Length: 379
Image 1 (tube, rainbow, N blue to C red):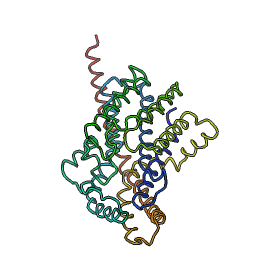
Image 2 (image 1 turned 135 degrees about the vertical axis):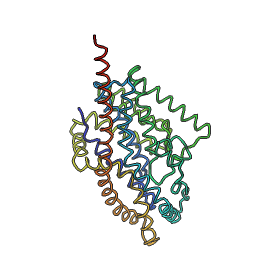
Image 3 (image 1 turned 90 degrees about the vertical axis):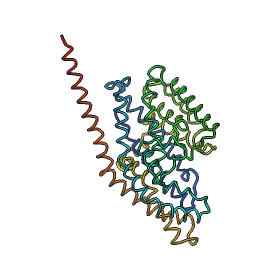
Image 4 (image 1 turned 60 degrees about the vertical axis):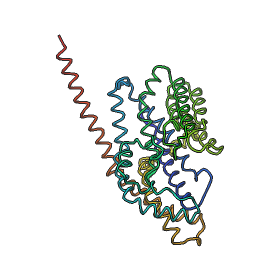
């Protein structure tokens, strides 16, 4: 099995969930679960842990994961998957920051929310830019949430990529279950130590705060080789660890439901009811919803702030929160996905191709050097 089609649909739904949740927050409307965009990000995290492990399993027969060159290749692929679009939108966000902050002040004042920090929208300092270009910002509480983009999760993602090869080395030495437990314990100790030391992140952008969810997704992929119930049991326990974001009863129940539902889609997709859901999520519509998910997730706040502020300024208290949400969403969603489609073809795919070209170039050169060395050493 080289591809699981319904993952596209899950990625697409996760991004749409975040967009809808933020629309609710910025228009004063609320529904349970849908109004919690952080849960959509948690689904992204489960998917990321699964996909990295699934791809590792596909490549391990032809890649030596004990060699640093393999790690570098992995890091280059992931860098060029995220960075081309992110860097372009980061420039746009920093240029639009002053207007977005004015829009956010109007929104927060109307909804009686505490005002956002001005630095989150308007900090164009060299330090802030360098920290974001290097993805180091997620490690620093003062800079982890300091652009108008929802990029705190990208810093988190890059930290996961950074440690992934070392997690795999531990897995190869001790096995999946033991490695997952050891890594989770280390992450939890670091997270609680940071909290005890007064280190507070405005968003869970620090990997130890979310490593347990990445590990849960990794175990769902590892279970494709067997021991499904054992892996599911440990994954359920990991997802219940009360660190990283909100951990009330609703969040716990929804996270566990997402985890078990995801596991069922992967491991029970031939069952009649699940097979139908899996086929739907793998359909062309959901495939493209997934393909555009990264762009939609990353850029939606650039559009949403302006539209939500315009809706409030135009109708003020004369419009109900439900109507305000509906109007805002109907304007924002088509615009966001149209832009995401354009950036997918103009930026994302060319960026990925560039990454592959760089790897192919240096991979060919390395192979040539190895061949020459072997010829010299040959008797």
